[in-house]
Length: 102
Image 1 (cartoon, rainbow, N blue to C red):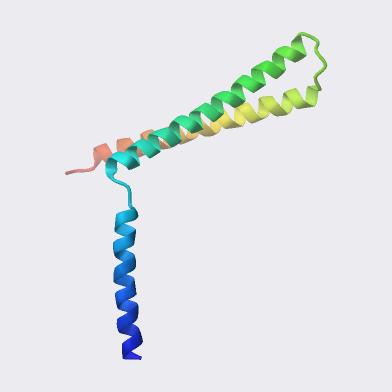
Image 2: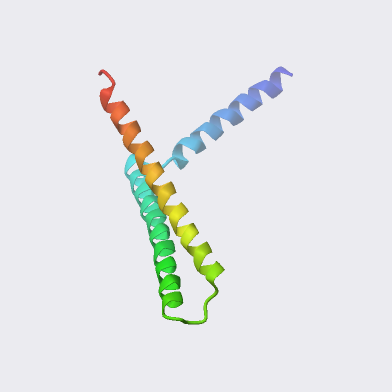
């Protein structure tokens, strides 16, 4: 039993070294987060544009189902509202951090 625990301890130490080397640098993490945020905002924009296109097609009298236009509009509204709520939470968190004594 003692031999197995020593081997497990060595394996754990080796795994910890691998985990540390796999962690991105702060710069890489910042770039990754920035890319993720940019992509998320682009997706919200794409949904908004699709909703506008569907609405214009309906107004122009093209062959488009009303229920599809309404579903697309609701998706756009939900995406925008969710984005605004996330923004509000981030601003609140930032303000809370600023209020912390150093």
